[in-house]
Image (cartoon, rainbow, N blue to C red; front, side):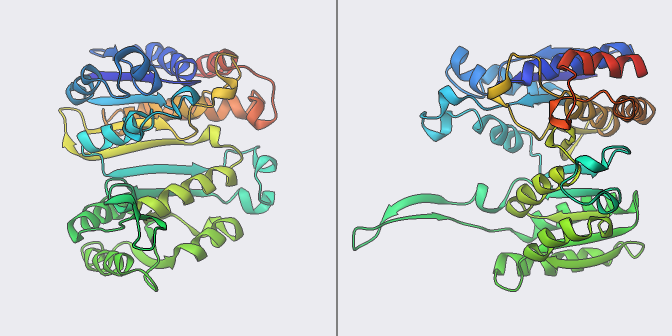
Length: 352
């Protein structure tokens, strides 16, 4: 089982170290872990945020464990050389089109949510976000109009096959959870969203055991803070999913608790090839200080074991150890506690 370990920038190396300790503690047979530079680290050492050797390693691996990218010293570089382009490049090169972001309220953390405790404790949802289309990958430019004014544009588009494949992922996820799927779009004003809705309805005929509903994205944003317990699985496009999944992170108390899986269609001998990462970013303001919360990184490891290596029991052990760590009051600064990065990692190990 070959794992490409890309720690990246900022707090990435610190949180990755804790996840690696957990992986080592499982003592799995036949695991090979290889490290490589990515993001700002890749640019400073190799002149590109996604060096050729890193890309080749990711392609040859069964799964990619990813820390974070983002380096303020690279902010003035041309866009294609900025650290963030590394993750976009990996998604494209590995054809990772489905991003799974679970948001679950851990018992005892309800008071940390921006929502009322009785509302927050009902949160247990999964956001399935399409990753390879929408405005992020459409034609884009800044151009000069005939009258001299500058105009920026980004093309939003989806082909029906792109919608169909993400819809299948979402319906299958709903079958494994509560059997409810909410498709989020803006079909009242966007033709792209109208096609999205039409295709999702077509795919739903293959999943009679899943209850399908639709919601405009502005209403979904309101409902996520008003009554998040109504959601089981949410499927949406790249732009809307980016925003809603970050909103969900604050509903559960901290972005430092949310893991994610980016999956494609490639099947290995063990499971589905994917890239796994916390959603919180590189946090350069606290990098190197031992303050980062590694739990989202550790939970990303659990998702990797589940989806790419079919090791459900080991994934569940990690998640239970994280939940027990939090229940025992061991929390980082993002959760109002004082525990440092290594202390939190050691606590998870002890409970594993």
